[in-house]
Amino acid sequence: MRNKCLSFALLCLTFGTIGAQVDEKCLSCLRQYENGPRNSCSHNFITKTSCGIYKISEPFWVACGRPGYSWGHCTTDSKCSADCLNAYFRRYASRCANMLKKPVSELTCADYVRLHHGPDGCGMSASLRHSRAITSCLWPANMFSS
Image (tube, rainbow, N blue to C red; front, side, top):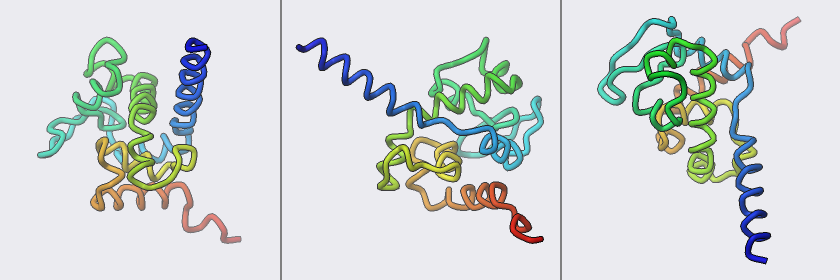
């Protein structure tokens, strides 16, 4: 009986994290927002150095499971970078959902963009500007004009 309960719990955890991935449209908007050429890096006082098309820092890369050959390689490889983002989102989606007081299945692209700025990003008011920028990418102003 104990094995059945453990198997069920594992199954629930697995399916609970499947929804914690972003689609290609969201990744595209995140690429546009971060506006990073593959071989470029930027520096700030919080994450220090962030590189590549998604501006992935080394601590972010470690938190996403260290995919690829190295942090530098992963930031320049679009598939590795996208895989890293999705792994990070799966890891921290529950935390984000708890901060926003909603189920993981209801997290939006804008929520994941807030999460991209750190495991506590969903609870930080400063991250709202990031989610607003993504929302304008997902829903362009001229979308409903004829």
